[in-house]
Image 1 (spheres, rainbow, N blue to C red):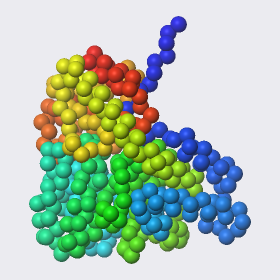
Image 2 (tube, helix red, strand yellow):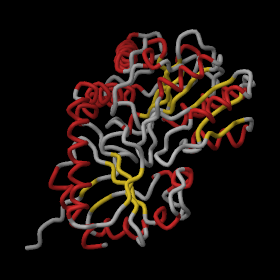
Image 3 (cartoon, rainbow, N blue to C red):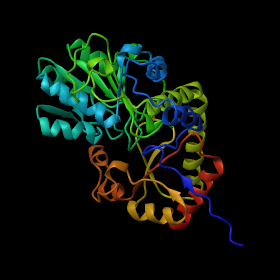
Image 4 (tube, rainbow, N blue to C red):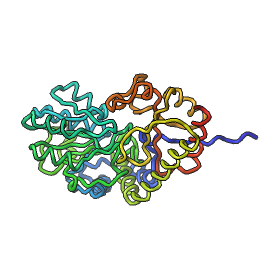
Length: 370
C-alpha cells in the first residue's frame, strides 16, 4: 500500500493557516449571533459587545487605544485608505522602492510621490529619505515595517522620528510584521499602521488600520456611519472576532514563536551549507524570523517552485501577489540583485506550526533538484 505523501506548507508570508481558536471563536457569530452590530435592538447587543471587545484586544496588542482601531477588509484596503487620503489632502508622499504594490500603485495613479532607494539588504537610505522630506514642506512618509519578499525589518522608530522632526506624518505597512515581532505604536512614533489578519493565522478578508487619535483622515468608503463615521459598511463581526483571537494568541506566544522560527531557519541555512548547495541569502540581518529569500545560481525560480510542488512542498518565487508575473520582482531589482541570481530566487516562509522534519525534507528536496 502506497504511503500518503505529507504536504509541507512553507509560504506563510503569502497567507497563514487559520488558528483553531480563531475558527471556534468565529462560529457563534456566523450561525447564531449574526445580528447587525449597528442595530439598536436586543439581538444586536452581543455582536456589538464582542465588536468592542475585539477592538480593545487588537489595540492592546499594538499599544494603541480602542478608538484608534478601524476595521477594514484587508491590508490592501488599509494602505489604499492611507495613500488616497494623503493625496486628497494635498500631501506629498515619500515611500520606498520596495513597498507592496498596494502602496506603489496608488502612488503611481495619484502622482506626487518620491521613491527612496534601499541598500542591497533592503534598508532605506537615511540620506535620501531626509533629502526627500526636506524637498517638500510637509506630507506623509510611508515605509513598510517588514518586507514581504526578503523579510528585512526597517528602522521604523528612527524613520518616524525623522519624519516628525520635519513636520511629517508617518505611516507603516505592517502587514508582514503584526503578530510576528513586538510592536508598540506609541513607543515607535507611528501615526498610521496597516495590518491584515490572514498573515497571523486569522481569517482572510479582514484587516485594520491604526490611526493615532487626533489625526483627521478622509474616508475611503462612504455610506453608513460605521467605524466612528470613518469607514462605511456593515462590520464583519465573525472575522473581526477571529482576527482579534488570532492576534492575541500570537502575541501571547510571540517570543516562543520567534525562537522556533529562527531555529527552523538555522536548520535550513545550515542544511544547505552542509550539502554544499550554492546559494545567496537576500535581506538584512534584522528580519522577520522564518522569512527566507534564497537565490540559487544558474537555477530558475519558477522551475524550482514547480519541482518542489510536485514533491508536496509549497514555496513562493518572491511576492505571492506577483504569482502571475514572470519578470524579476521590483524588490529584487531595488536591491540590485544580479539578474541571473534574481531569476533563481525562491522565498521560503515558515509558520508557527512548521516542524523540524519538514525543514530537513525541504533541504533534501532542494539537493535532489539542484
